[in-house]
Image (tube, rainbow, N blue to C red; front, side):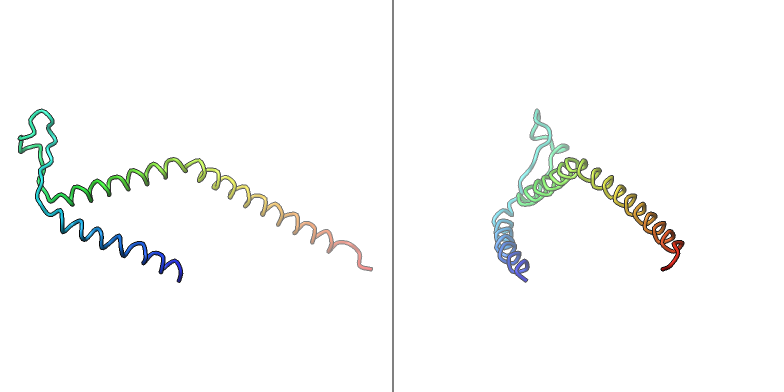
Length: 110
């Protein structure tokens, strides 16, 4: 419940700010991909300014997520190997327990 309220307190103002930003930046701008001839229409793109900002944010989030995922690969690899080792130790403990029960069943009762 607290997490929902906290998310509401964070994301609601952020959403309002983004909506205001979009309404304020509706002017069409042109982005040129040719640095030597910026007036070249073949290598340019025209769109509202907020579209370019959102595309830059999305690309940044994807690049950051990819960098984080790649950086944490050593931790995932270690977790996998430790999980395999835990399963191996558990199966060995189960074998010993079964063997101990067999031995206990073979002992003469008092």
